[in-house]
Length: 335
Image (spheres, rainbow, N blue to C red):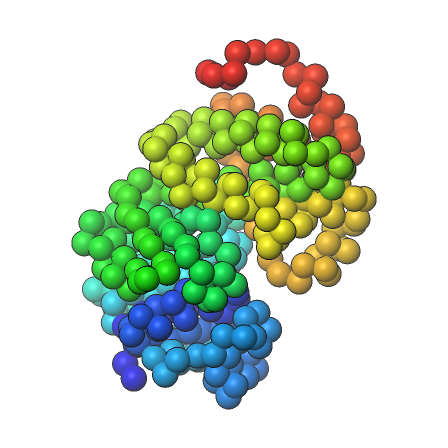
């Protein structure tokens, strides 16, 4: 089998996307950075650690050889690694990526090294002519693999590349929409993880549905302020990559970020929370990077700021809530 798509990352979301594409009849190769994990998946034809009930179709192969995986990708490479590994992964890929192959990613966050958006990192490493796209939206891996109805936004630098990605993803249970607002699609996916931690903290403290709804709504206002400042469009943030992903991540306990917040609200330590969840919690790093980005751009993001203080400065969650409630009263819009 000659793969058309290579998926880099064999966690739950990378595996779900690889399965989705392969089930659609597109020859797909999935890379894991751990040779023993790749060998186990190849032998068992499933990802026993993350999605044990989903068997691999014949159109999905597995490898731990990054050079081999990238060089074979005829149409595109899909990066599904945590945001802290995004830059290093692209630097390893760059010498082996075919000239006509596009790059897409399902990573939600900012570049750890400098706080920039991931498309800026990709352009820096791969050059300005490479077709790029981000996949973002309200999608839990287990539900996609179970073929439950789902929808996603594809933010692409090229209309043709966006259309190709839709053809690889779209089927009777998975709907893909396109946008050229790659900035908005990325910021929605990054900010919502921080706000999901905040909503989880509120629920962990027992503050109820009123508080959760207020946090989500005012969190959306923060997300839009930052995104519009950086050139995004409001309709992107009101769509799947913004409010859709925020509602999903802030309200459902399949969300690792929400569960992290719940643990904090209940007084658990960071170590206990990581041990219970057992996977990357993207909102922790995103809280720091988005807080710093907002500061550089002069954007007021009070919920993000208080979440940052809880995560990095040891502020008590109850004090963070008081700080938010005691802010000067203002009109709802424009503030």
